[in-house]
Image (cartoon, rainbow, N blue to C red; front, side, top):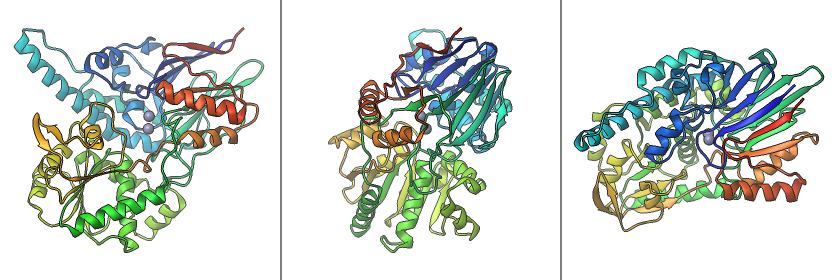
Length: 468
Ligand SMILES: [Zn+2]
Ligand SMILES: [Zn+2]
């Protein structure tokens, strides 16, 4: 009997998570994420699977971030006929995340075809459309946490809490062979202990093989209490000088987390009760999924919901869906907080808010998430004197503050502690979802502290866990 893992995507890089687990009787993929990168590479990698999608028995989805779920519509387009298993919350979040991604695919190809037309090149088709994304949701089958569920002839799936975003899970695959069982845990992405709103990551028992992320394998996040203090300071300072606070943020999880933190600061009288706007239909829709699934939050948050003290919305917060309402924010003269996407300032309504506010030294821009190289977000982080927005140069005069402690990914030490908490019989740890230098730093840590010899599989590499 043979059990093998082929690391098809998200290996030695952060995006495009996808791993194929094969046994004598079944083929199961863990995640089907979108690879994010330069356009040509993006279309090439995301349109070509290294296996035939029709040969799969199941797709197991860890959570609703686009680098984990975003290529499911392509998989289905290319012949996948089985089920996508996720937690119920992940399915609900995907109802908004996938069509939004389809919309972005169509908008991007529209732009490409405009350029192609001028060059006399043939038109191209989007990776998938919004309609195809909506259709793909029919193949989702939600599975509750801790309920073991057979997904193929010889594989049983159980979801455990990952503590990374709402609905995120550590899927455990139990593979039954004639003589024994092999248990594989997939902690990609893995959250942090003690983060507000979310439950802590769980440690499933008797794991033989662990696949774990290494995004921040070589880093330690700053102290969250300190970040909260810096956030309060910048808000107070900006209000005093009569400016606005602009916060670029990812629509899923980071937005809800920052809303929670600002609410807490107001409740504790650390900052004045000023108007706050969460601007963008995706963020607004995802926040409604959060509210409808309050039972999946941590105990404190559940109790707050039960007391009708919605931690994600008070009377001073306006959730903005419509474009005109968003444009009206330009006329808002008094201090306020505007939270909008995208987090890396590459597209979305945040561009308009930055364009209108970046040149005024009274204002502040607070960066709370990861910004990739060559993005507007990174240029703001690096405090370039002049930045281009919609192709036009703008002087960066607003105050810039960068807070990296709000990350929902485990850092190097968190991952070491997580691995330590699993059973001692762990046979192998595979480090994925990280740039090579971060994975390497984590490998050194795990080797030093736990005497383990983790592997950093290359993209396309196959590792045999059991062979005849
Ligand atoms: Zn994630
Ligand atoms: Zn991820």
